Amino acid sequence: MNAKFKFVFIAILTGMVAVISCTLCSCSNEDEQLEISNSNVSVNSVDFVATFTKEQQELLDNTGYPFKTNEQKNAWNNVISSTIPTTWGLFDDPREVAKTRAVGIYGSYPAQYWTMLRVKLLQLPIKIKDEAILAIEEIENKTNIRFYNSIEDEEYYEPGHIKLPNIAVRMDNGAIEGSGSFGLVGGEQYINVPTVLEQASNDDIKRFFIHAFCNAAGMFNEQQRKDRDDYVIINLNNVKSNCKSVFTKITQNYTMQGNFDYFSITLAASTDYSNGSGNTIMKTGNYNIAKNYTLSYNDIYFLNGHYLPYIARTDNYIELDDTYYPNGQKLTEAERLQLQTQLNSQRGLYGEPPLSGRAILVEW
Image (tube, rainbow, N blue to C red; front, side, top):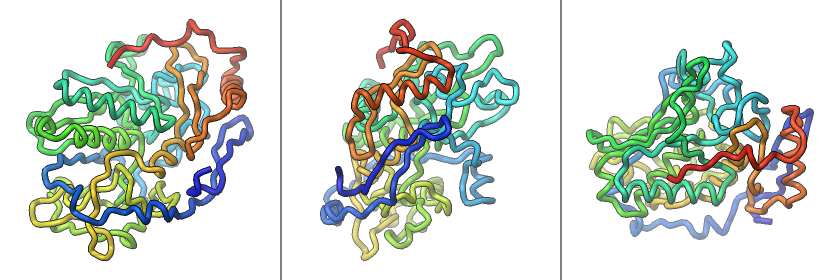
């Protein structure tokens, strides 16, 4: 077991699945590996800015947290409606009148987490598309998150003319920075890719997409933690005016599950978002922060704590791919089947999910 975690176990309580974990211990190995040199910091990296919706910003201003309590649904401790397939990306059935806004018909739905991330890659240059696919594959290989290619799905579900949620990845010719959303907004939301990203290295393009998909999956940026001032120094005067939200402190930040993570894919490097006046963020002690190119242990731990690895299906059965504990250990086949059976029984479904119900996956 990884020394970073004391214990993690799965409990079935009152018909709901919960993940229970202890407070994370510090990891001295990672602390010793901290890069404090300039060698990996580039002033030419393309920035990505996830922004809050108007409703999320109002909630943040009023409560210190941009999601309502009943919107913080995740696959470990919430039951998905028994009448919808997991590939819809939602926990609630949008065909119920009271919940139609869950798919953006009457407004946004900042639900924070998805069941599966529904993604469309729209007319992207080959280099950009290839690295976006590699980012998706890395997240799927290291976490419980599963993506669903919704490019061939109908835009609306009939009857009811319900627009299902999608993350549409598209080029934005007029932008210098990339942009996107935090969590499930509802309806069509976007990851906007600036054309200048084509000039970046393959590693920087992949880094851009891992960061963007993690924000869309419900993660905030590491420098937004409420305790960040104990670990980093923010130089807002050096931050581009349209990027200051990246450093907005969230006083009830859900990533407060362990020590500040200098290795998170969501942590800004020292020269990220700079207006040219100097570094934007430094480690306390005036050390540079290098760019991170992959998911950290804490990133993986967080995502695994909120997602289950659903296999895409067109029916209402739940089927699980190999499941991972936060330390990377797979569930045994018996444990996987027990969890899968428990989830289906909550929907009134019994027996093995039939193979005929699996969705035919579309190539990216």
